[in-house]
Image 1 (cartoon, rainbow, N blue to C red):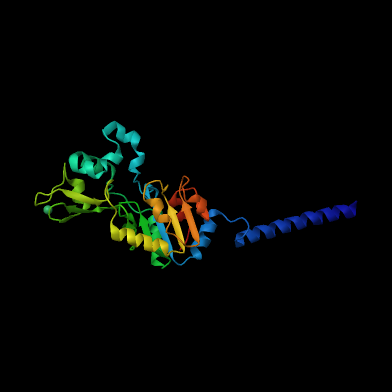
Image 2 (tube, rainbow, N blue to C red; image 1 turned 180 degrees about the vertical axis):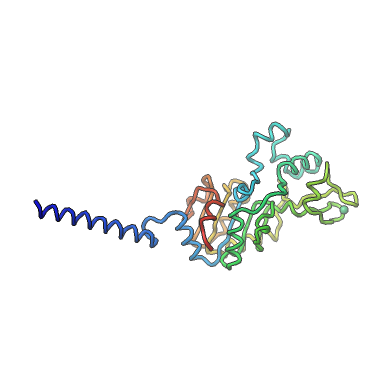
Length: 271
Ligand SMILES: [Zn+2]
């Protein structure tokens, strides 16, 4: 009996040692890695990362997705946002367009968040080659990113439709009614409206970056809006990561899916 008791205590001690070894191995990186650890390992092992982002990247900077504000706009605007942000609406109801545009699409006080900052640092370190974004707020460049493909243009660029003169966003934001150029022409934001084509060189650059990447991180987009999903199909690399609060069509192909806010995830990583 005494001998059995000693054996049992020895067995228990051995189990504890075995558990400790298992935990130690996990910390080393193979058994029970967290999603953050997996993502860090993928980033550490990649040399040519491309980030593809959408509205979710900017929500943590206080810029909501205008498509998700139906409850708010319904009380104020007579038309759904998709209709207002269309070329034909812009041409026919220019003043109404700018009312919505200033109210719902311009956020002059917005600052880059942890996601923008981390991506800029990755680019600076030579690991990230391009950011492809569906956002129009210019926050990636504000954070320091240089190679940014803005699929839907930028609110920071505005041009007279008659003479082509450039105007900064402040001019649009502080104007009343339809913003006009000194020549009398209407100033149009360099934003791709519904019914309009994406910029050719921008598409080309984005496709080239994605098709030569070894790691593609899709973040803050449900890939629901055309043509986002089409760009993802050009990826031929080995590491596809999706970081989004809800599921996306790319999840089934992804090596890693993290259902969380992009800024929250990136703030836990190092370059
Ligand atoms: Zn002009």
